Length: 64
Image 1 (tube, one colour):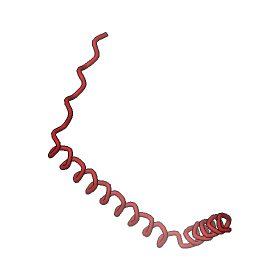
Image 2 (image 1 turned 30 degrees about the horizontal axis):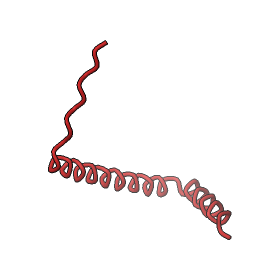
Image 3 (image 1 turned 90 degrees about the vertical axis):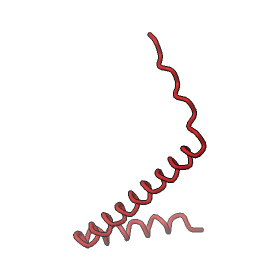
Image 4 (image 1 turned 135 degrees about the vertical axis):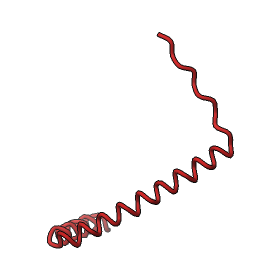
């Protein structure tokens, strides 16, 4: 079996551009995720309250 040749290393300016694009995509994803969580909390207030209580209890168990 013949393996493909590894790709050459990206140029430094390409790497910087790729890093910037990756950060922009990640920021967009996190914004949308927070938006979806907020929408879910508004649509299902009882479930959101229960989840908030569970989170608080979990945090309390780790405090000394």
